[in-house]
Image 1 (cartoon, helix red, strand yellow):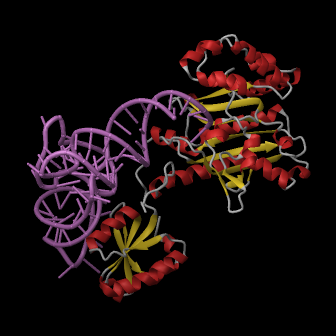
Image 2 (spheres, rainbow, N blue to C red; image 1 turned 135 degrees about the vertical axis):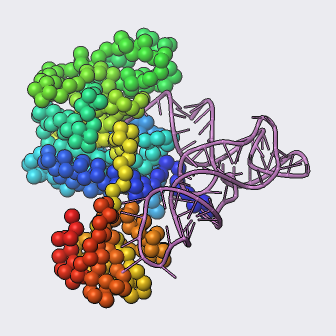
Image 3 (cartoon, rainbow, N blue to C red; image 1 turned 60 degrees about the vertical axis):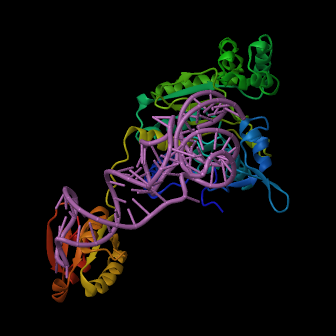
Length: 421
RNA sequence: GGGAGCGUAGCUCAGCCUGGGAGAGCACCGCGCUGUGGACGCGGGGGUCGCGGGUUCAAGUCCCGUCGCUCCUCCCA
């Protein structure tokens, strides 16, 4: 057996995990700030859940989804995204019956079988929100405001970000627009790449975000979805834009933004970084007003977004180099001699019970070595030598300033915080 | 899915072109200093040279294959 991880799977080691924990905490706290509550979902679902919602013809389902039979032959999938699961849970547990807007968030691993590269693994991590139950454009605006706020909160500047925005209309508009695209692109079929010639039949919307140079000419003059919106959808979008302006959130209308998932309706958006290359989207989302009904629930509109943790970590560590690791311990015990060590084990257990992060050397290192480890790991060293111990005292050394003081052990153990800053 | 580059010590990498000693820096351990860290000096441990095959008297070095990572493209988070 080869001792190595599976392709596309990655270990996040303690040094990096610190940043992940910080980010996850920020994300959770901003989500709560907006009234979203966590939902924890299974990583495994029926494969059909995704093929029906995300779309059979999408890249995600068609070539990137991990699908396999379980022992009974049932087709299961490792989730490639979480919105479908959220909606499944929403219907399964009758959350709509509460008659209120359901504001939910999640954070966790997703799986897509892709060619791995930096910032894109086969197991990756997404955080996201979903608000189910309202068609109010103010809710679209809230979700977008949340996205901006979150990015700023984790340390990205407004100037380094931009919002791509579009509306692709409702299920009444879509066939009209689709036909418009189909007839437009049919006229110049020979100019399109092979993929796009196929897309022309399957889903002409997808031609719009094709990056092939040869397709660009044709795409530039393509009909825009905004010109095919019904009255209601147009009003919805106008209202959203107006609220965004009131909130001072800038946007760039991008008629080519269609996104890679079939369930979207009306509003679609991506919040992107100016500092990333081709993979510049930090998070993306939009409305999915037909999704609940599609899965057998009552007609219920929804809006949300999902962002990638890996990409966020990438941008953040790109900006500022990983700051020198601060000592994670309050106290490092430095016993001297056998007697000191016995005593150290007792003190260790006591301090930990008092909530003081404490550790000691288990490697049999020399005193100087233990001191150097102490300096790296902790703010204070507590030296336990026979001389002091015989008088019931210990020596506390501040490893930052280098000053030390001798103090009675019972007094220190009674209120250790009085001696630690 | 298509194209390119790179895999040598825990880490960063040199060595490969022009085949013959497996190396440097950092990290780690010990000693100078057996009761006190960050400096310095001296010494030490650690490598299936990604893996498999081929060429050769001889392969880290040349050839083929394979796996992995990285970059571009694609896709998207």
